Amino acid sequence: MSKIQLSILFFILPIALFSKDLSKIDSLKEPLFKPFIERYILDEIKGLRQENEKLKAQVTKQISEAKLESSDRAINYTTSTINNIFYIITAAASLLLLVGWRSLNDIKKSLKIDMSKKTENIIAQYERRLQQIENKMTERSKVIIETQQNITNTNSIHSLWMRAGLEKSEEDKITVYDEILSINPNDIEAMTYKADALLEIGEVRWALDLSNTAIELDKNYSQAYWQRACAYAKLEKQSEAIDDIKKAIELSDTLEDELLKESHFENLHNNITFKKLIANKKDKAIN
Image (cartoon, rainbow, N blue to C red; front, side, top):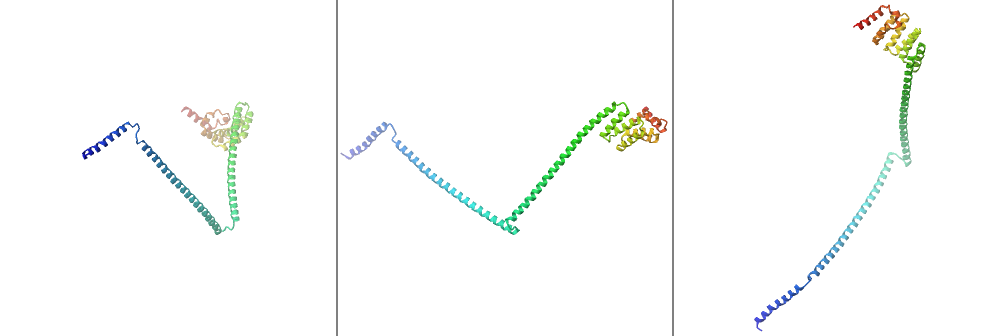
């Protein structure tokens, strides 16, 4: 064969083989590269497992080292603390020796003395507080009792005044006024009313004494001066009677209306000063 024929043969043969392979490739139902993908995935999983094992080993090592370091620190801290405590105890013992404590018994005695003093002070404070509370309670009890007694006395006196208004005889009125004065000895109103009743039964001196007592208790009580003026008029002491009438009218001008109505002033009707008082009263009424 010639060289040209051989060349043509070598050119045509690969083309025929490639055409045959193409027909085979077209007839394939599954890809040929699937086993390579599975192999790649298995290799990756294996690599991840190996890396995970390495990471786990590193973490375990780091945790162990951290625990060991923490234990070392705790041991060192405990050792330092114990040493410091011993140093403090030694320093305290040395200080106690320097200050002058000779033994633990001295410390106990000192503590007992201090505790006794503090206990005594606390007890004394509580006793003072209890005494103050007791005093306050006693004072409040007294105030309550006094208030209740005052209320009772006020009610009793009010009832007696109502009773005195109903009595007809002067003697019975005097008895009621005495009951009022037994409850309240300084009741100047009861004194003056009793003095008036005494004048009605002719006990002029007694009425004068009661009027003087009422004036001593209250120098601004007009009725006391009025009753004393009545007593002086009965005793023919006109000058003293006129002075008390003026004082009574000065303290209560409404008494001017009683000048001519007062039966005990009959002895004064001819007195010039008394007449002037009557005239002044009439002038005021006209004006």
